[in-house]
Length: 541
Image 1 (tube, rainbow, N blue to C red):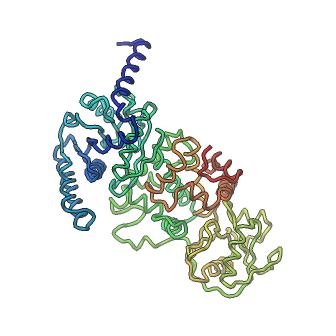
Image 2: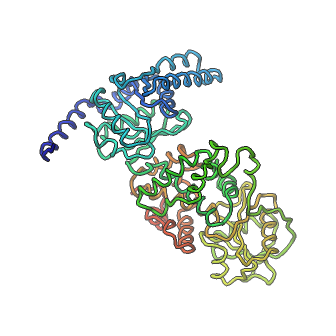
Image 3: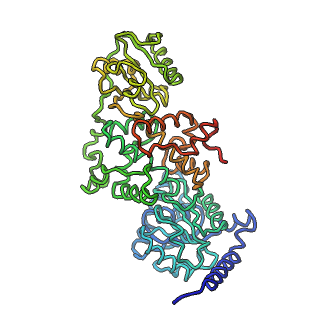
C-alpha cells in the first residue's frame, strides 16, 4: 500500500496537533508543571535492575508506580527486593518505617500493557534491541492517553530510531538512568529529532521530583556520559597495548596521581567486558570509525576467553587472589638518594619551575648553568612528547636524561611518574627514582612514551568533552555535571581542563600528535580556540 506525500503530511499535522492540544496543561507555567509532576503516575516496563531502581526512587518521591514485566514473577520479585531495600534504609534511619511502608504500597506489580493505560509517563527498561523497543512502544500507544510521555532508558540506541514508527513521536524521549539508580543521582534527558520541548521540559521537572540531576542532550551515540567515558578506558588500553606499562601501574597512577576513584582496568573488571567491549565497538562504529574512540584487541581477546572481570572471577585481576592488584611490571622507586648533581631543562619554563620548587622544598641543590655538567642527572619536563624527543631536540646526553610528569604538580605526597630514554643508564635511572622519592612519595617508572599516563588520559578526557560541547550534544554545564555524577570523576572534564590550563592541555595533544602521528590526538576546535583566546573551556559561543 502506498500513500501520497500530502496525505502523509496531513497525517503528521493531525498527530502533532493532537499532541500539542493534549499536552497544553504541561506548558501553562512552572506552577502547573510542578503540580502535574507531583501527581504523576509512572509506568515502568521491565523489572530488572534498572526498572527496579526507577520504581524505587519514584515511589520514594511519593509517586504511584505500575511495574510491568512480561514475566509476572519478575515484577513480584522486584517489589519484594525494593521492600527489603526500604526496610534496610529504615533500619539505618534514612527514613521512617511508616515512610518505607507507604513507598512500597505505591508500587503495583502488573503483568499486562493494559494496566498502564492511566499513566502519565511510561519508561521502558527492557532488552537493548531496536525492534523489540519499537514493538513495545507501538503497544503502549494503543493503550495510553495521547498526552502521556513515553521514555526509553536505553544507553546505546537512537531515540529518534525508537520513535520513528510511533504515531506521536513528539512525546518520545530518552530517560537514561545509571545503575544503581538510587545512588547515581543523574539522568540524561535525550531529545530525539522529533521530541517536543514540552516533553523534555516535563521530564526535567520530573527528574527534580525524583531527586536526580537532569542533563539535557541531543540524540547522538553514547549521549553524554558514555560518549565522554570513552577516553579513560580506550587510552588506558592504548597505553598498555603500546607496552608503556602494565594494567596495575596504569590504575595506581589514575588513582594516586590523577585522584580518580578507580583506574580504567578496575572499572572494566567491575562493569564486565561482556558489557564494556560491545559498547566500545558500538560507539566507535556509530561515529564511523572515529580514531578517538578506537577499541583495543586486548579486550576483544579477553572477552573471547571469558575473562570478563569480577562476574567471572577473572579479568585484568584475579579475584580469588587480590594480591595481584598491587603488582606491576614497571618499577616503583625505592632507592635512597645521595647528593649528586642535578640539572633541570628550561625548555618549558613553567614546567621547570614546578620541578625546581619541589627540589628546593626537598633541599636538593640544582645546577644553574645553561648546560649540564658531565656527571649530572638531566631532568626534562615534556608535555606530550617523550624523553627521547626531548634529548634529541635539546641536544642532551640521552644516557643521562630522565623525564618527569609535571602536569598535575607534586602536592600532598601524590604519586610521581618518571620515564627514561631507551639509552638512559641504570645508574641515572636509579638516581632519578631516589631523587623524586626522597620524601617518601611513591614513584612509578614507565618505559619511554609520549605523554606519560596522566597527560595522555587527561588530555583525551578533556578533548573528548570539548568535542561534545562543540557538537552541541550538551551544554558545558550539563557535560560537567553528567560526567561528575555519572562517572564519578573528581571534576567535570571541562572544569578539569580549566584547572590544569587549556593551553597546557593543547600542548600535550600537539606533543602526542608529533610523537605518534595518530589522529586520535588531534585537538578539537573548541579546545584550540579557547586556549588561544585564554577563555574558559566552559565558555559557550
